[in-house]
Amino acid sequence: MRYEIRLSGSGGQGLVLAGIILAEAAGIHDARFVAQTQSYGTEARGGKSRSDVVISDEEIDFPHAESLDCLVAMNQDAFDGYYRELKKGGVLVVDSTLVEQTVAPHALEFPFTELAREKVGREITSTIMALGALSVITGKVSMAGLTRAVKGRAPGGTGKINLKALKMGAKIASELLKDR
Amino acid sequence: MRYEIRLSGSGGQGLVLAGIILAEAAGIHDARFVAQTQSYGTEARGGKSRSDVVISDEEIDFPHAESLDCLVAMNQDAFDGYYRELKKGGVLVVDSTLVEQTVAPHALEFPFTELAREKVGREITSTIMALGALSVITGKVSMAGLTRAVKGRAPGGTGKINLKALKMGAKIASELLKDR
Image 1 (cartoon, rainbow over the protein chains, first blue to last red):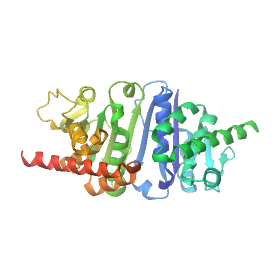
Image 2 (image 1 turned 45 degrees about the vertical axis):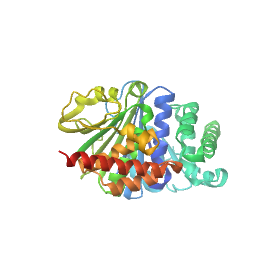
Image 3 (image 1 turned 90 degrees about the vertical axis):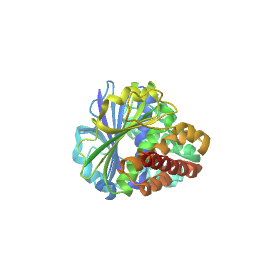
Image 4 (image 1 turned 180 degrees about the vertical axis):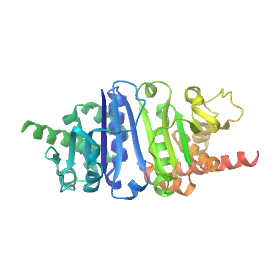
């Protein structure tokens, strides 16, 4: 089992931290092999940024995500730029607050940013909310692992709201899947 | 120019955060292309952990560090485990507080952990101190970039002590190089 996840969006959406939380949850708490990569450069200076996490049952020789099993697109530029790297049958999760055109009938759409702003009170928690949804949808990382990783990494006093966002992500994903 | 740096040590030494600070300094502030990778799994559960940063003037197709230009070893297990991956003529920086046997005459030794504990007041700042030394020794990342990245990433109220550690690292490296 090798599973490639890309978290993508704009630079200010906390993707690096979210990637590390996902990697620590799967690698340290769930005891899988994990490689986590991010790139800085022209991409980060443009409208899109990404953080890749590869999860495996075996040691990972090649940490580069090449054929995505799951793409999380938190804005339109990220969707447009990375959609083609999602493999056939891959899981596509989009933030419907910021991604308006998906041209993908199988996209799982959640208003992460709107919910983070209005229900959690901090827009920056949207990407952590996406991790909660990811846990339920893909089954590749546990909510227990994510909870522990958020507690360990959320800066200063932001642990509580990030945990609220994480749980909300799992809840809205469960509801969406139930209706299908 | 492609330059591969590995920061290595034990899990509790803040290597993931240090890798991100180095990558953001070089990628965002110094405007180079940067890929940053860390692995979780058996290594992280053992005595050694690592965070790799590849800096380049061109886009990076392969983010995996294979032939290290610079190895920073913050403990003995990391030194023993990764020394062979340093290329011939590569720069070796070791924390002499925790690495007792280097078998490498060209090692640049600094008591990062001791200085972090006794002069800065927080042992966890040792790895940030190593980044300051790295800037002076390799010239591949600027102190201005590192300073901005530390300010942006150091959690809560730890910015000030981390900046102190960063500057101390640059200072001790300058002194060592001057004597050579």
